Image (tube, rainbow, N blue to C red; front, side):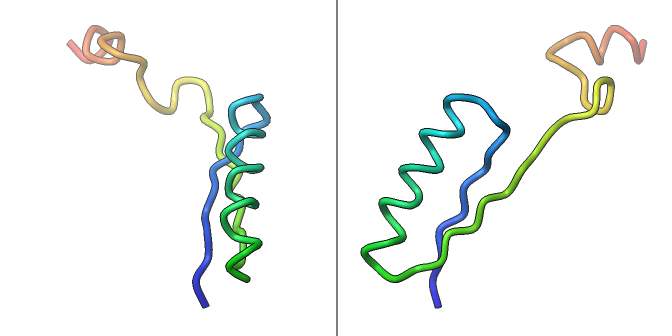
Length: 55
């Protein structure tokens, strides 16, 4: 069975993506999988800041 995967994080953009994913999946009888993602502060560098700390 096919499915649609949507990443959500609680933002308005994620809410819109979830609605769009549902609109795409429902008429096809596909499953909708919502994946929640968050980033731990400091887990991934932002832009060049990570390079500055490494050197």
